[in-house]
Amino acid sequence: MAQTIINPDTLHNPVGFGYSHIARASGELVFIAGQYASGPDGNVTSGDFAEQVRQSFANLGTALAAAGSAYRHVVQIRTYIVGHDAAKLDILVDVVREIWGERPPTQTLIGVAALALPGMLFEVDAVAVSG
Image 1 (cartoon, rainbow, N blue to C red):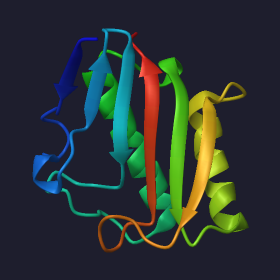
Image 2 (cartoon, rainbow, N blue to C red):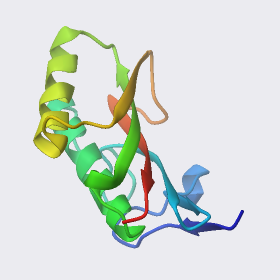
Image 3 (tube, rainbow, N blue to C red):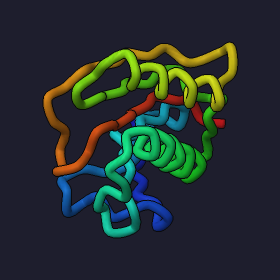
Image 4 (spheres, rainbow, N blue to C red):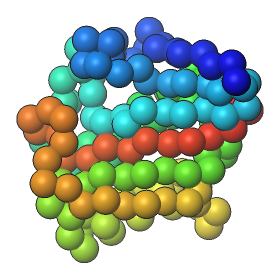
């Protein structure tokens, strides 16, 4: 199975953090690493949960485009929420509906105590097919 690693210039360089943004397997499957509300330097851009969710999904869109895919080709997402509660779930559901409407991909939501960097409140990873 052939694989290609992609780290687009339009996202922060993740190698120093110990991962790559995208792996494409056999030319069909695209695996997107956890995207969070990162700026060009890899630091968290906001302490606000809703802003982090929006920026994380924007970064996911950037990664998908770099891999020749798009939101409409996503088949699965996994979301990670620090201190998960109903209010945070409502924010996530609103953003997912904005992106996918009534046809969201499969999703597993995982409540966690902490994520990789201080200040991270949300992260999303994805599996997609090439566009």
